[in-house]
Length: 288
Image 1 (cartoon, rainbow, N blue to C red):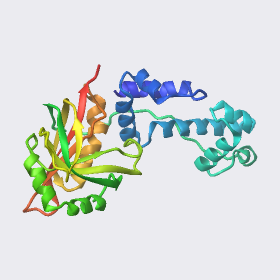
Image 2: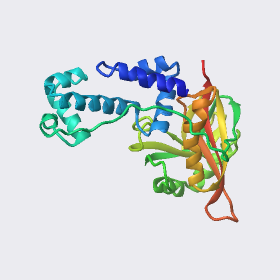
Image 3: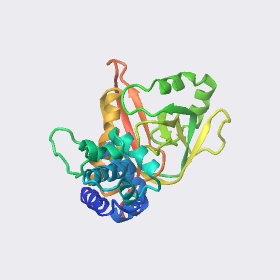
Image 4: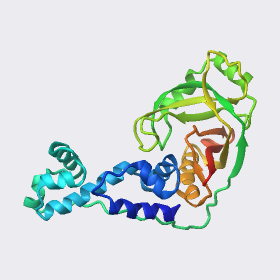
């Protein structure tokens, strides 16, 4: 996957003055659009579209320094109006395009290259589980996206679950991992940016058809799942495991992530404060 990522970086460089579609890039990399965007975001910290925009504006800065006309530069990098280019450039650089040549302002955003920094000591255990079609059944609400720390909106969601809802969930629970799980889906930016809101569900896995009206339901087709166990301080260890699956495991594995809701569960250690065993379940398929 790293080879494909670096090939795509070269491809983007060769097409900065053209309209580059995310689907076209994924096809060039030989993986699904969804998988490529997720891998790229977790490795770079940027959405793919944001990276392309930054590279275009960086090259535009060079052209403006060389005293090319603002109009020509705007159209060269695909902006349909001078106003649109001016807004984007000022937001990116803090300066108007017309100021660049006059003041000799230089701002750059370099091309990315990807490599693996191999360090000993931290292996990633995982297993592949084949699951039948099932449903997530539970209680859900919109919450802010948050990659680090305790998400207080999710804590509030957990506290809001009634005894009747808990009983309904436990009556349905009939599928591995036989735990109360946390499911996140329907993100405002398709999980590509660390902002916006998503829908978070606290619920169970079930194959039952008769589900209480007290619960929300998500249908899940048959799929393969990569399961990553982890143990340590909570929630830091769980969040680090999520990040490592994308930054370390997926780029060198034979699998790609698919657009189904992933989930996790956590068993808090009663004898150690803020310490837990957790598992991350990621929906995947073999690369073609």
